[in-house]
Image (cartoon, rainbow, N blue to C red; front, side, top):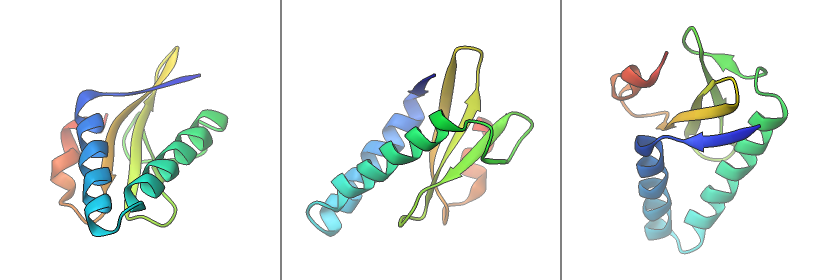
Length: 97
């Protein structure tokens, strides 16, 4: 199944990669690798992750305080947020279905 990130999630991903690269060169790449690994886990078992809304699920990243919020559609998995777990939850409220 195909996974697609909506525009706000793409922006959050880009910001996080830049932030981690600024903290330590190469850390942004490791963060991106963990995002890719989480996407593969979601593709393999899309319904295995915790529901945080009626249709929205959350897959936690390993080693980083982030989670992917996503919705299973008919032909794709739609990632709605690359959510920092210490950020105010209200920031993502409109992307939880």
